[in-house]
Structure formats: structure tokens, C-alpha cells
Image (cartoon, rainbow, N blue to C red; front, side, top):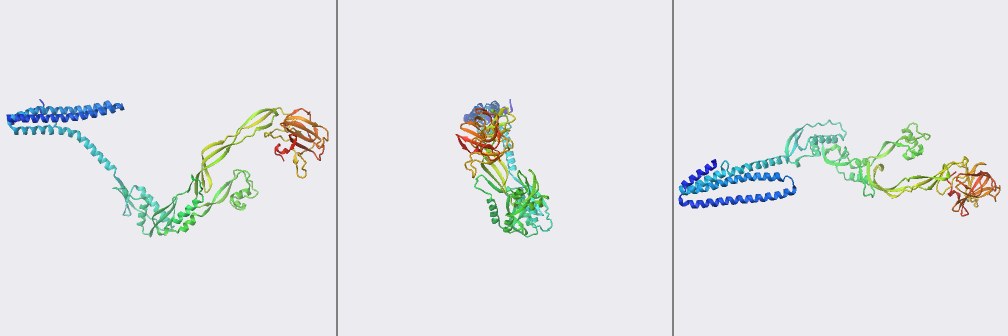
Length: 587
């Protein structure tokens, strides 16, 4: 028999001795009612728990993970709880008969006494209900308490309590705040250029728990440290360009306007541009030495001024001492002082660096903007064989045309001089046209014209040797009836067919209606060429197909001529036109 069962038996014995027979029925009914209420209470708890378990099990079935482990854990927990509940129920059931017996045998008050003893042992005994609940609740309460302590500790702000020269200044976040403040004070003091002794600060730190809002910034620490000095100090705005300190102003409105005007000189209507100084300019409010204050006009003169700086000019193609002098806006004498030996006769070469001086604004302005523009890109060239032309005699059958791209780029400038360009987008707006060149493949006779490449629709130069010299053009001034091009050359200079064609006329006589000895070649499409005043005809005949560059005669002065030259004509539909449109450029 267990200790609890012995306890119930003893309680029952006492109950039998204390309760009279008339009271047994009443107390038995009360005991049964209490037992039933206790049973209903646990049934409700069990029903709620089972409902929760079913809901959790449904979720776990959807998740498909950790279901079995959790269900097992809950079952073990409530199995243990169920065993506890069963033990309490059994004790109550065993005790109710004993309590009834005690009331019958020992009286009503003895039964009440037994009920209190039973309640105390069931609820507060070593294995009572209260002890069991306490064993479960206590760990949870401890965990919650520990979590709150850790959360409170981590939410607090710790800072350094700063003492300088024995004076408490305030709280700072870390040591760098003080060291940075020392540097700020050094700049403020050294601005005046005085011979004052170096200021030393002795400091001390202590860790303390404070609110975040109570900590000092670097500039606040600097202001409070300055107040410790035995010097005249005033409130103002320290002007800093980058890290350099340029003095203190009582008011910086006009200086700010002057700075904005400088930037305005570089601004455009481009909505994408940014215009700013290369160094940040700030006006820091605080306490400064009285000797460091300057007038706004002095600062304005400084920021709007220019300075002379040394630089180098890199020589490019076609440069000369004169052109370099004009480009850099310096005289030859000024360049000579910077570059010993430089003069108007100095030979300069591409890539040479010439030392120069130039004006540069005191404040550099950087402009970055998105720019849109068109750029051309090269076309491709295709070579095809042409068996109607001599080797080296090429013709451009189709002129190439560059393509065009619309470009969007980020471009950066310093003082309006471009320093970088980053292309963001390139979009082709016009495709290039491929250049097609017909390459001659016919074996070239020794007496043919030298190799050349001509554009589509144009002829080769018809005079050999050095090419001769143009003396009279088409409808030359004072000679309006002249409908050809005169090319002077030594007697006997070879004359070549300007284009492939068929010989339609040969006049070997010396006069030929004023043209003297001449040849006419038809090139098709109503275009023909005439070669006049020649000294003689090569070995050719009417109806023969000749190739561009083939020898057809020699320069002379036959017919109506006053000197050795070739009279060259171009006829379109039988009408003479200006030959210059069909010939390559020539002196």
C-alpha cells in the first residue's frame, strides 16, 4: 500500500470515528458532488487540449515536417498529466467513503477536519497538485525573468565620461570624438599664424550608463574645450574647403551667394547634370578664436580669384611653334623662358611635351551630365575580282558610307575641360553602306598606265609620266569656247584610255579639223571621250575594245595647237561637258 493510500485510509478511519450516522448521508452527497465537479473540470481541460492537438496535427500534416515529434511530445506531456489526474481522482474516490464513515462514526466536525486534512495533502503535499504545477511553472517564470534582464541590459546606452584639464565636459560615444575635436581646435588656433604656445589638453575617461541624447558631438566637444582656454573667443561660422580651414565669418550669406554664382557659370538647361566644387565647402557653427574672424569680402575675393599653375601641352599633328603659341595663349618668348632653347625654328614632334602656364580658378568645378549626340562608325570594304581591268587598276563600284549611332553618355568636366566619358547606350540610327571595290585581274602590259583606284563613275588620269599639268580648263576665262581640258606634258608622253570602252573614231592625220591626231572612245550609256593634238597613235583600230589604262597614243601638238599637250574632252549624248567632274584631282 502506497503512502498516499495509507494517508487516505487514516483519514477515512478518522472520518468514521468523527461523523455520526445521521451526517453520513449528507457528507457522502457532498463528496460525490465535489468528485463529479472535479471530473467535469478535467474532462473540459482534456477536451480543449485534444482540440488543440487536432488543430496542430492538421497544420503539421500540411507542413509535413516535425509532426510526429511534436505529437509524441504532447502525448507524453498529457500522459504524465493524465497519470497525475488519475492519481488525484483515485485519492478523492477512496477518500470520500472514508470521509463519510468518519462523519458517521465520529461526528460532523471530525468529518470536516478530515476533509481539510485531505484537501491540504492533495493540494499542498509532497506530490500534491500545487507542487506539481509549481514544478512546471517555475522554469518558465525563470526563463521569462532572465530574458527581461538581458533585454533591459542590452537596451541601455553606455558612454565615456570625458574630463579635460580637470573639468567635466560631458559624455562621448568613443575616444575618436575627443581626438577629432583636438584636431579641429588645432586648425582653429593655427589659422591666425600666431606664435602662441602649443595648447595641450589632459583628458580622462570613465565608462558610464547614459541616455543617447546626452552624448556630445565632435564639434560640441571642440567648442567646450575652446572655452577652457585663456583666450578671447566668439561664436561664428568656420569656413572649411575640404579639410582646410579658411577663417571664421559672422555671417556667410554673401559668401554662399558668391559660391552659387560660380556654380551658375557652369550650369546649363540639362536636367541630368550635377554641378559641384571638387571639394566640399561647409560653414560650421561653433566657438572660434576672435583673431580668426575675417570679412566676407576677403573670402569672396579669394574664392573668385584665379591662380597661375604649371602644365604641359602635348604636341599633335601639324603643330608648329606658332600654332602652339596661339593655342596656349602664350608668346614665343614666354614659352622660351619655360623651355630653354624653344624658338620659332624649333622642330616639334608629335607627343612632345611643352611646359606652359595657365590660369586656373581657385575653386575647381566638376560638372557631370548626360549628353546625347550622334557619332559615325566605319563601313566595311568588300573586294571583288574584275577581269576587265589591269592588275593594279581598281574601281570603286559602290561608295561606302559610314553608319550613324545615337549615343547617350555620362561626361565629366573640370573647369569645362573634359576628363572622362562613359557611354551608356549606343543605338544604330543608320546602317553603314559597304564599299565595293573591283580589283583588276588582267595581266598589265608594260606600257600601260600605273596602278590606280578610281571612284565609281570617274576616269583615270589620261596622261602618263608625271601626269602633266592642267593649263586650260573647261570654258576658261577669255576662252569661253574651250570645251575640254588641256594637260601639258613633254612631247611623246604616253596617253591612256581614261576608261574601258570601244574605239569609235581614229584620225591619224595631223590636222583633223583642228584637233589634229585624235581618238574617240565610247564607254556606253552615251558617254565618250576624245583625246586630241596627239603626236601619234598606238597600235589600235576602230571597233577595238580597250581597257582603262591601255596605251592609245602620245602627247604632241598637232592640229590647232601652240604647244605639246593633250586636249581631253568628255561627251555625254554628244554634248561636251566639263571633264573635271570625271577625273581625279590633279595639279
